[in-house]
Length: 315
Image (cartoon, rainbow, N blue to C red; front, top):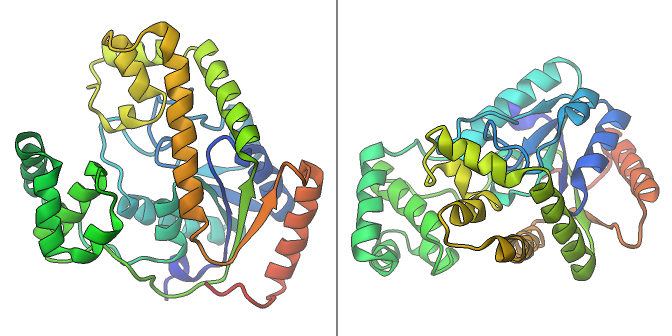
């Protein structure tokens, strides 16, 4: 088995704004790890402020992988993340370091950690035809087709989730296969999740959004638009940027923009938590009741047990 599919992994997951970045860096420093960023927005070059991307100082403390890995117009799938993530695991382990997967994009984490066997990428023509059908016929028509050709995906994907509906359809129509539902070869994994109360997380989201706007998020949006990046580009679907495009087009007023970003980010955090609570064998740390220093002591103790080959870590 390839080292990319068998190497032991550390994982730190949690909703946006919970406080993963600093704790992940400290954990990596303590155990000699390098960080694989499992985030569907920080992969895009030039989209920095609204994605809360680790800055030069943070990246200078610990080597990070899969940050700035894609052009803003590139369609970056979980399968693509898995391929690059495997490459990162090989490089990290060859240096004698430990891969630490950090992020909030649950599908990315699952793709890498659980070795999901993704089908080959479908032809672009299939994707374009489905996108045209979505515009012409609406999501309901595509949902009806999905129910016929891939009932399992139809049951799992939310009725209003156009992006995932398109993805499931393009895979089955373009490759005659379905999206993976079962993991591949098992590996040793230590999964740790971070939590905060709903009110505390909401306050942190609001404070971060305000700080991002003060730091020039809207200037960043305008700069990308003026450079010719389409408002429909993949990178502009990230929270903060999507709303910034609405503001740039005059569809959202400056007075309501901040509250809109906060509301949508809170909704996203809720969806993240729903996903992560379905993950198995996660050791949770509530940062409201356990301070950062005690959290570090827990991470160190669990790491020691993990590296000693303790029970219960085989994925």
